[in-house]
Amino acid sequence: MSTGKGIKRTRNQPALHSELKESHRIHLTPTAWSKLQKMAAVKATSVSELIEGWARKNNIDDE
Image 1 (cartoon, rainbow, N blue to C red):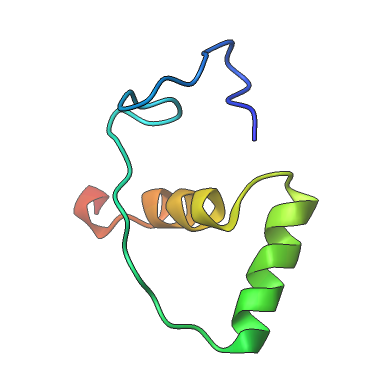
Image 2: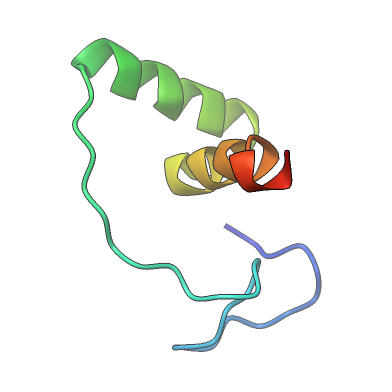
């Protein structure tokens, strides 16, 4: 996936957000995972970025 902003990815440097991502684990049904993969493919992004975007748009701290 390209950053789309002319930024070269560098290890331990955030590329798309102001902070580095960390590894977390979630449990999903196979149906939900499949749908997320299809949605990400349509948007030419990763499932991780899809979830990240959703979480940032729906941040309850902003309310």
